Length: 169
Image 1 (cartoon, rainbow, N blue to C red):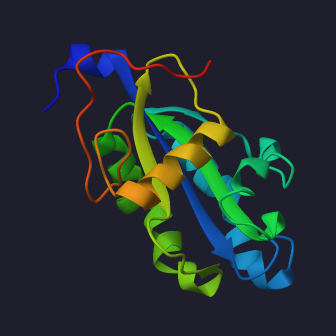
Image 2: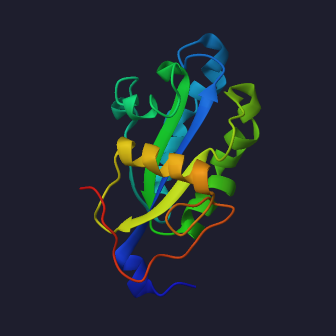
């Protein structure tokens, strides 16, 4: 277990992406679209939750940093979220031990498989918040190098570094 003092210095940033079968407004996506606010509210109340990029801030325009990674992709079919947690364990608990797990288990109804990891995690200095551009860089690094202490997955995670890293405010 990581010492509480070290957890105070670092938080865990996470982003995840997925290709939706259709735009979120399409009637075939209702099962997913109807649960987004519920899951966001659950995350907001979950132990260890620090921050999340609000749904209103995720638009086709703000997802432009992914254009260089996915040339020609349809931004309006990219499901994206980003949040910050106190620890890997707390993010795991929300992801796999809450109502979120139900949606995760049913994702094939709305989501296509993507090559490689669909989530990227990295440590940031407490009080800092990641940007969409930073998350795109982290995701790309993970795709190229696999899990490392710099960026990793829930399956293969790493402890916080010994001293604070740079982060975006």
